[in-house]
Length: 281
Image (tube, rainbow, N blue to C red):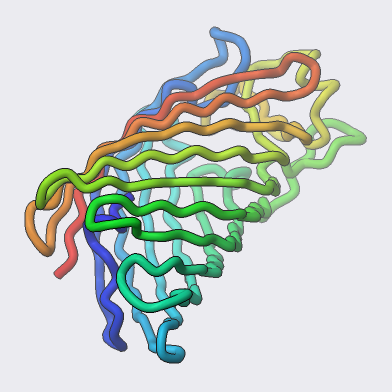
């Protein structure tokens, strides 16, 4: 969402961006029963370096790297440090600012968490298309594939894998941004993801029979178990506002709701509120 306020420069120079924020999740454990639902707030820091290289008359290739930190106020074992690489290709299908565009993006990152069960290698690829209709309205839509591979296998139940945080999924998404005046813009997004999800609860026979991987999740408590649930469908709707303080600083506030449906009635929902301050020197 900050992309509307702080666009990448279209020339071959390295550009840096630094973010600091707060993110609160109402159901951080992704649990079904009220007694297992844990809310938590994370303090987040991010530093990124990007470079855009021309690749023809109307195309560009972007390469970059980033480092992230997240510190949870309650679930300390879920806090993590991460480093990653990303790259993308984008081209316009015509001339002028309102010409439509298409893009392909990929990312790869390592996460090191306070508890080994949450250490992971993350990767994602996406294809998208969009258009700026005028000076105020821009839209985009696309398809993404995400994969997370838990670094250690930590089985606790015979016959079940010990990598509940090894997940993969496919997502259809759409987003839009509408500028209000010179400094503010409204953003909206919607997505539908199908694939694996992870849910952490206390011992629960219903979720035990539906899971295909199980491990202890001490990040949330000594009696919490992490379960991988296949075939889930998650609908996400989000909105936000971005305020540009100038060419270098922007403040972004977002509200996101996730509704996940899993076979066997193991449904859950989550609400995420975030505030991020971004600085680009």
